[in-house]
Amino acid sequence: MKPGPVWWMAGASLLAWAAVTAVLGLESALEGLAGAAAPLAAAVGSWVVTERTHRTRPERLMSVMVSAFAAKMAFFGAYVILMLGALSLRPVPFMVSFTGSYVTLHAMEAFYLRRLSAR
Image (cartoon, rainbow, N blue to C red; front, top):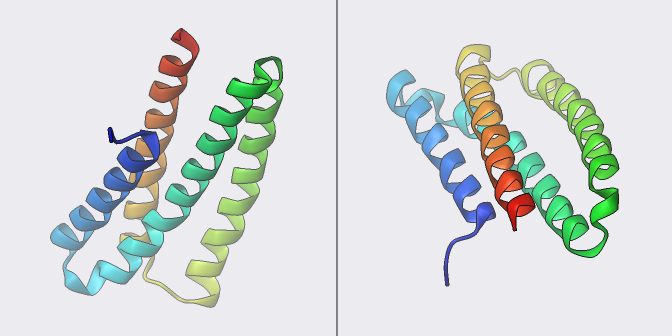
């Protein structure tokens, strides 16, 4: 079986976590994992919905994507507040991992959306 977008996204997040841990030290592993987890969950969730919408009702794709973007922004805001506020994770390793994962996964989603639309 050929790996699909979800597997590549998971691999990219694993690499982001490993890179943060390697560069900032083993004591940053928890923050790196927490920073990569939310962008991965959001990217996988929105990709599954995007792919399903494109397959079943392609005329609704733009409205679904806009709604997913708004939901992700609210989720990310609450997640960052929870991680840095309530759980008191160290901000630098968390934000390095979060930002790197967020940017990488959004670029991957754009790439896969382009491929999906070209079919």
